[in-house]
Length: 286
Ligand SMILES: NC(=O)c1ccc[n+]([C@@H]2O[C@H](COP(=O)([O-])OP(=O)(O)OC[C@H]3O[C@@H](n4cnc5c(N)ncnc54)[C@H](OP(=O)(O)O)[C@@H]3O)[C@@H](O)[C@H]2O)c1
Image 1 (cartoon, rainbow, N blue to C red):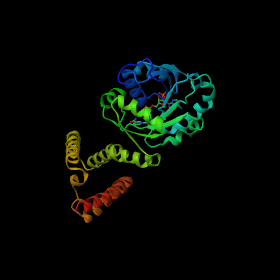
Image 2: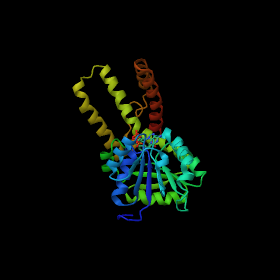
Image 3: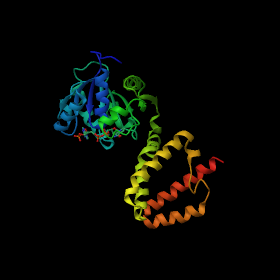
Image 4: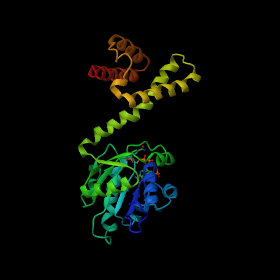
């Protein structure tokens, strides 16, 4: 699927925010899918999404959507079950005159498994999920950063095979994941990326409260983060560990933990928990 193909499967989109706009733009550009109908919470945002994708018919209601071979549910995680149920209600009428083979529906959540699509699986639809490990902060940036993005797939074998081809065609690196492993898998991504801004914000809050001149902060932030990334990528996390835990200085950890807890209770709890993990990491390298 590297060249535009008139017979490319039809793709309907339910939820067309950052992820769907990025993926659909890439698939439209490579001709993997023909983007057909686009549903969001309003006709105005569906129109805007179609304009970004450069394809797709904005629709106002799920019952206005036409049959398609592939359906992407890229709504927020909390909406996946409700969207699948809403689609299941209209599916019999929607597919009355459609080709015999059951449609494929997939969602894009890392934290949820295909179980969220049970209402459609119950109607015989092929179900899958495809989670791209990328922070889709905005479409332009995500388009540039997408090539090489790992993408675990779970669900029916036939659905995974089709999605494997489609995601690989736009530069993703696909692999299979067991549905029961998705919660832990996604928690790992939270540790690896989502917690970094939290840790940085906490550090900067502490520095501000101790009188660090504001004008020094941007350079300090950049220097420490760049050094940490360079050390972790070249040495691995275990060898890159420094600080009181790396030295086994439990007395310093206890004093600092108490001081942080007095400053802010959640930050103190985080300091204590992360110090326990850091001490364990340090012990493992001996
Ligand atoms: N953002 C990331 O970095 C990232 C990374 C990997 C995976 N994901 C996953 O990708 C999925 C989508 O995330 P996103 O970041 O693209 O979300 P988003 O930017 O917030 O977009 C969500 C879209 O869903 C629409 N929507 C909300 N409720 C709906 C409903 N009931 N029916 C139809 N459309 C509805 C919204 O409509 P309006 O435009 O009208 O508001 C919007 O178009 C989630 O499962 C998320 O976990 C996200």
